Image 1: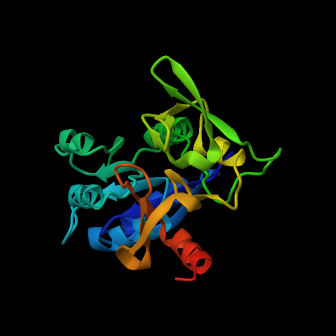
Image 2 (image 1 turned 120 degrees about the vertical axis):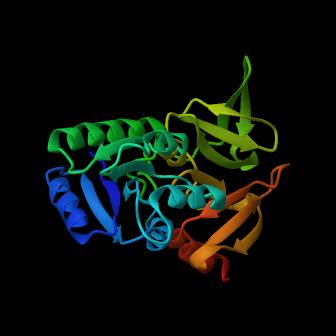
Amino acid sequence: MATITAVLVDDERLAREELEFLLRDFADVEVAGVAENGIQALEVIEKIEPDIVFLDVQMPGLDGLGLIRRLREKGVSLPYFVLATAYDQYAVEAFRLEAMDYLLKPIDKERLDLTIVRARRYLDEQGLMGVAEAPERVSAPKNKVVIRTGNRNLLVDVGDVIYATIEAGAVRIVSSEAIGESSYKTIDELQGDLNPEVFWRVHRGYLVNLNRIREVNPWFHSSLMLKMDDAKGTEVPVSRAHSKKLKAFLKL
């Protein structure tokens, strides 16, 4: 089972420690980082790119809901947010901002079990769980991929593929010839069929063709933002870890 990376954000040390203790019972959940406030959490989330974030609502400086808004404004790929608070009046606003679940303090172990089950299912369906290195290749790289547009299945040269991303649980491919859904269920699966020297997973939600990058620009906290060679000049964020790797590859 793929590991779910988690970040805990709470200004109360005892609350963080209690949640971390409860999460030890889940063998596939790894607490990869903690933050004491929203400002700290911004940096931790951008650096680690966790699968799930347990987030307190009321915190000094930048509160939990403000943190989600800030990440959305930055265009950061949002993790699976679970709001953890002693107050239930924030639920409606939390879900409006794309929080996926809501835990009331003190956190009940059985309710946490349900939260992890939901998160695991969502991440698996979105093809976002367990992103690390390129998947193991079982055959030679493919030269063509199929893109569905309406009722048509178009066979496109992989060299014309600009990038792929996840939208509404489906792998969406953008090429110079067509834009549409792929028959692949996850980005991992697509990546495993392509040349790893050309197609890089620069972010949890993006696979890009290095030959179709138009610009490489500095972004937040030493990370990069790519402008791709499609008609819209789509901007693709590069995670901090992959930014270091890409800078070395491009001699930046």
